Length: 216
Image 1 (cartoon, rainbow, N blue to C red):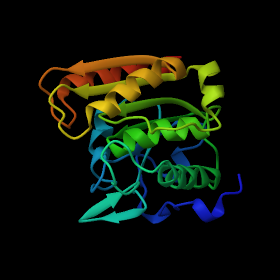
Image 2 (image 1 turned 30 degrees about the vertical axis):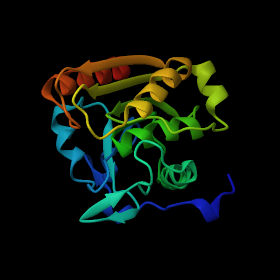
Image 3 (image 1 turned 135 degrees about the vertical axis):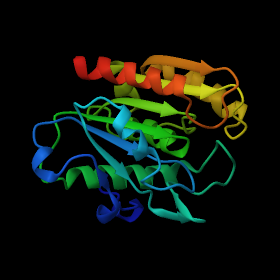
Image 4 (image 1 turned 45 degrees about the vertical axis):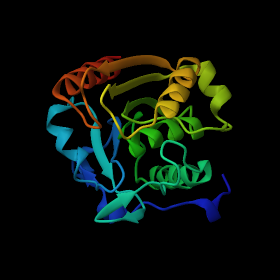
C-alpha cells in the first residue's frame, strides 16, 4: 500500500480508549469515528451503553474544522472528493498497522462523515473490517479496489438515518441505498422525525446489532 503522499495520519495522543493497554490484549476492537466539526469525545459518550466485549477506540479526524475536526473537506454536501476520504481511510489503516498488538476483529461505528469513513474503510480493507455501523452517512461515488471483494464477503452493515435529516442530500441517500445491498448484509433502519442525530430508538437498535456481532 504505497500511498504515503496521500495519507492523513491519526493523532495517536488524541485517541480515547475504553481500556488500558494491558486490558486490550486478545479482544475485538470497535473504532468510533465522529462527524464534521466534532471531536473524539463526542461519540465516545456512547461507550457506556455499548456491549462490553470490544475495546473501544475513538479517533480524532485529521483536519481542523472550526472548533473541531473533519475527515474530509466539504465541497458539495454528500458528494466529496473521493481522494480525500481515501487519504483519511489510509491514515486509519496505518494507525491500525502500528498498534502493538492486533485485535481479534475490527468493527467501525461512524456518524455522518464518520459513517462515510466507515464504509470507505471497508472498501479499502474488506478482509480486515468485520462490520460497520453507519449513522446518518453515505457512500462516496466511484469505485475502490476492494469493492469486488466486498460484494463477495457481504459483511454486516447497520445503516440508520432519520426522515428529518436536512444535512445529507437525497441523492447521497439514494446512492447509498443502491450500493449497500450489493456490498453488504444490510440492516437498514429509518426513524420517523429524527434529524441529523442519534435517537434513543436508534441507539437501542445499534446495541442489538452489536450484540449479534459479538455473540457470533
